Image (cartoon, rainbow, N blue to C red; front, side):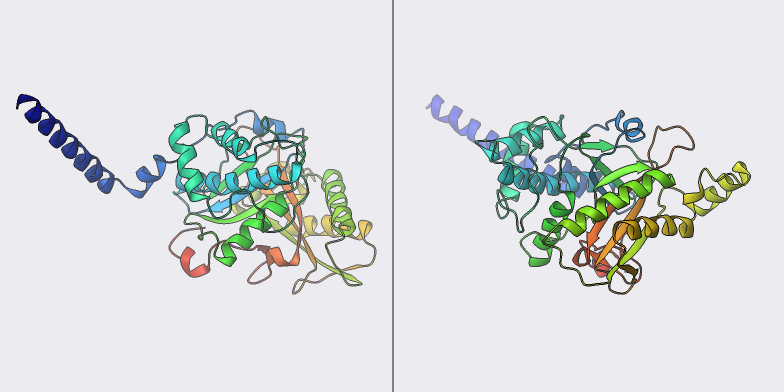
Length: 345
């Protein structure tokens, strides 16, 4: 009889604990609930200085201001599915892609509860795990030792993830797959991440380096047989200086007293340099801002922890289906304008 009473008390105690747990979860804010699934990774504080000397690929993500932490978690969840599955599916050098994806997940988020994170991410990615919606370049260098780094920026509403240098990553193909998945309804529209800009290469903001990178990427685009272009080839150039405000730009210009060190901060000057680089790569090309067959997008990266006057840009050459031309030229949004209306960009 005493044993039965003991069992009954233990049972009721478990029920009470379970109810308390459920009540606590219900009272948790969305941010707290989200943090229970994926932990924020540490910043790679060596990455900004490395970007001054080496070119890397990666992703620049725009998100809701003051929701950077939620957006970081969401971005990790999205990229984990597509970077892992695309690279593993195409490389053919690993026996178990799922195990490798789990390994990457743990390395990207070193503070995660590994068991809980792996199970949750597996459940969330059930529809897309192990597949790519469209063929992408083989990422033969993306193995277990290559993971994305989170780089600290000085501006709100932006996230920067980079691959280790010398890593071959088809960032354009990865973002294209993400866009297709969201547009087709396979994946839900993100809540916090608005746009994912695929960075093919980075370079210092000076005329020589920018021309070299643009010419190289345009050559690659034109030599890729999957891109069908007419003649003359129509292209457009987009330039975002999110890393420097107009007031700061005026201060820089006044301080330099006419020096041409930061001449490329001027939009028209940058457009001219990029257009000249495109012309040198494809002589039969014309500017067309309404329906370009490819667009060269240049993004100024507001890196934290670099010397004053050190400017780095991200560059990509994107096909027509990945950009929008109205109201201005930029990478297509992952969420509709009506959904993003409540957040600041």
